[in-house]
Length: 226
Image 1 (cartoon, rainbow, N blue to C red):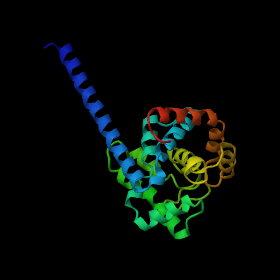
Image 2: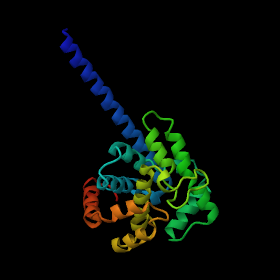
Image 3: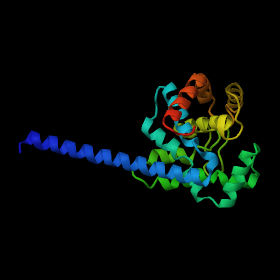
Image 4: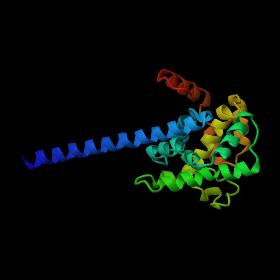
């Protein structure tokens, strides 16, 4: 076997290894999402929608973050919920379903899932950056939660993007089920409070109506709920 033939063979072997790793990461990621949605049916489709909006916001900013890493973080941002007590999860889900705020105790315990998820995923090779974004995606722009103390631009950009995408999905799907105009107003009201004001502005400049219709069409043709 010539040197060129050996190099080609090595390249093909590496490609097969990389493809197998990609498939494995995707498979266990989808498994975790399935477990989350089975435990909390209210979250069905939530993680795919957050990934969708995060991708488009990242693109609107000039793609400062690696798309693959951002999608990983978006899809797995709630993985820490699997470690929370049933009572906390149930109380939170009931509050969301009834379109009311959870009580302060439930809220405090619930947001801990961000830290838990970040810590778990940080132990996986290649997930360190996504894990950091997940850890801080509930930190508020104007003030940090006691666990992290981060606020403003100290919050990683990936976490700030996830926050905007997730809050928008709460308004349009999970809790409020607001119309797009109403959701725009609510999102704007959180700028410089819960959310990064520049990211909110960039998000609101997206063609949200057209993007949402496109997302629904794709999901319907894939046989998935949105």
